[in-house]
Amino acid sequence: MKYVEEFRDPAAAQAVLAHIKALSDDMGLTAEQPLRIMEICGGHTHAIFRFGLDKLVPPGIEFIHGPGCPVCVLPMARVDECIEIARQPGVILTTFGDAMRVPGAKGSLMQAKAAGADIRMVYSPLDALELARRNPDRQVVFFGLGFETTTPSTALAILQAAREGLGNFTVFCNHILLPPPLRALLQDPLNMIDAFIGPGHVSMVTGTHIYDFIPADYGKPVVVAGFEPLDLLQSVLMVLRQARDGRAEVGNQYARVVPEHGNPVSLKAMAEVYEPRPSFEWRGMGEIDASGLRIRDAFRAFDAEARFAIGYGAPTAREIEEPEGCACGLVMTGRVKPTACPRYGNGCTPETPLGALMVSSEGACAAYWQYGGARALEAAE
Amino acid sequence: MCLGIPGRLVAVADEATLMMVADVSGVRRAVNVACVADGALPGLIGRWALIHVGFAMALIDEDEAERTLEALRSLGEAQEALAMMAEGDRALEGAA
Ligand code: SF4
Image 1 (cartoon, rainbow over the protein chains, first blue to last red):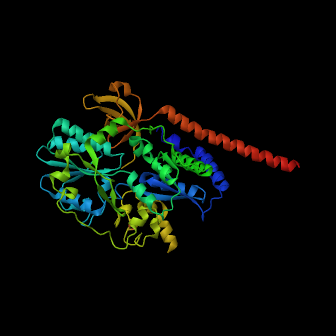
Image 2: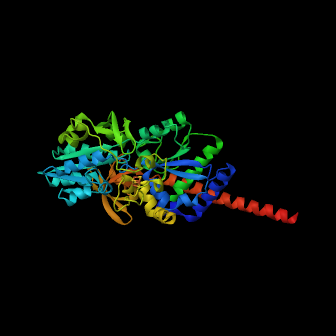
Image 3: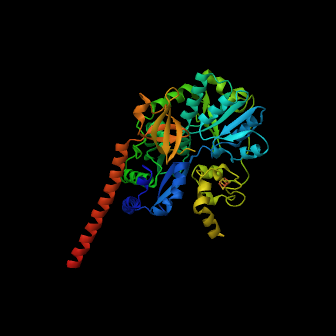
């Protein structure tokens, strides 16, 4: 298919790799003293493992996996609340498939569905909207989650529901913003990140300027990247060139999809429907200021938190502990690799995930497991 | 979930709700084009778009894609030139 195959051309990949290797040698990078590049996005983590890019690049380049998987950072309490909504009489809860197996303190959506709750997987929030039209006597709730990439789609769905005057459609909003957790990571003096590869599809919506603070305040290079192997390799090369020249700026490798200033329609819909919450909880990272979005009062009729008085809409908040012995928080913030978690393969596998990083194929632990991590574990035994 | 996939917009489905039909690897699906429609929908027929959860989120800039591929190809050419230079050096050494 166009724009997929072309960006997987092995000959071109070899050429880029040769340049990466030459530059890495020039800069004296080694496995002991590598350049540590955080790929922020779970989609990138997945692609790196799927195409074995971590093995193809020279040992002086180390990928650190970032917190950019919305399913993985979803706190247990939110999953529990979602299940609580799904159990209400007359409710049809709709969700992306990725969220089905995320463990909450009281099980997953999958388990709730098996126990009789009407939970349906959909491809698009528009499918949820259609279900609401076809089932006027039911309450259809869409489990809205995702970064800036996905937020416009639920905003547009809410705007469409408002235009149609649909009274039985709400969104349980768990949308989150990418820059706040990155700032939180960078503020940690122990962070080991030298440079970033930024998620192309977030910037497709927001543009590239959301990362300006990274070179400006922290002096680290950022390159916004596409998702094919050549995109990622070219981005590594662009990061290396910045590092060699002592530059730190925001580069755009994915200009075929990412306009500098983003997509105006998406940005307008997001701003119209959503506003930042004072703070939002991230699994493994705790509460982060202004990192989550909520539905504005003008669209309260479409807010599941308000309708079901739940979550941040509930009178009292609750605290839930992470599973015992898990290293989710450390893995999420790039401090340790999944294989260093005592529960990796020991109670936590994709079939029986303990932490959310093991659930979605975009989670670092699941990516390790699927593409060789399991082998590494066997080899170590 | 956060990934998109390129698809080609092939027909208008419903002008009022900004829906078009996209061909994604041979599979046809209705997608919302609110984010990329800037004028009449028929003008979008034939364009490639990045499709994410039922929405065309961006039009793929084909010239830009070509430029990126061109840059990648020229890396290949540069690599060839470097290889030839190395070859030349070896030849000189051999001659010395
Ligand atoms: S292996 Fe499981 S418990 Fe350990 S960090 Fe990964 S998801 Fe969390």
